[in-house]
Every structure is written in C-alpha cells, then in structure tokens.
Image (tube, rainbow, N blue to C red; front, side, top):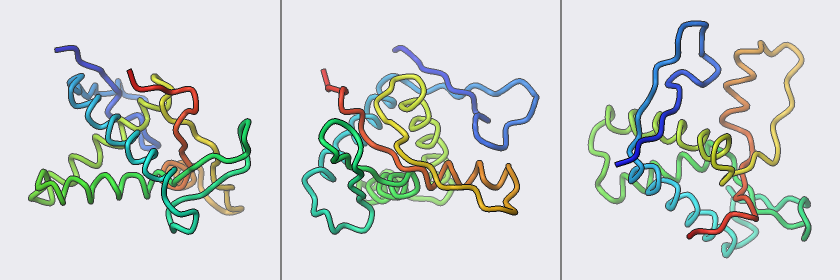
Length: 149
C-alpha cells in the first residue's frame, strides 16, 4: 500500500520547526480525490444559481465552475456525516484537517485542483490572518486537463 506524505503543519501556522509528516494511504487519497472530482462534476451539472457555485469567465470557454475551499470542505464533511463515517466531534475534526491537507496535495502535487481566485487582503489585516482566510475563501476549480483513469 503506497503512502503519500504531506507536512502536517503546511498551513499558515507553520513554524520553523521540522514539519510533521502526515501519512495517508493511497486508497484514502484516491477516495477523497474521487469524491472531490465527482462533486465538481455534479456542480458542472447543477444550476448556475446554486449558492456555492461560481462560474468564472476564465479558460478557453470562459466558463469555469469554481467553489470556495470552505464550501468544498463543508460538502465533504456533510457527505461523511450522511454516510455515517463521522460519529464524534473528534472524528469530524480529524477528517476535516486531513481533507485540508489532501486538497493542498491535489493543488500542489497532483494538479487535480486549481486555485482560480483568491480574496484581496484587507488593509489592516495581519499576514497570518490573511493566510488563514485565503486558505478558506480561495476559489478552487477542477483542472480542465484532469481525466480520471
């Protein structure tokens, strides 16, 4: 069973200490990736009026479906709850933290997801606060060149 590794503190709270490595089985990574891809495919077929869907005029056809990372993580959490995979608060927190790391991996390493827009920084906003907000509010889209094998 192949394992992928992502720094545990790769987020905005990362300090200069050696990052902890989170090990994720290939099966878990593929499962989360496939769910996210399926969700984006469903968004493409959904109404343009949906609250969490944004159509952006970028790309070759000026029509990219994007959703905020916060909304993507909420959908994933709600899906796990509906499936009975999360029964305690601790399990929920653990799954969301893991999902955040997998989303980062899908952006940085696999190129499955693309960041298509980030929020502007507020004038008096601290860098640390802005980095946290960017992580949640950035708009993600499925890479148009991605194909499931």
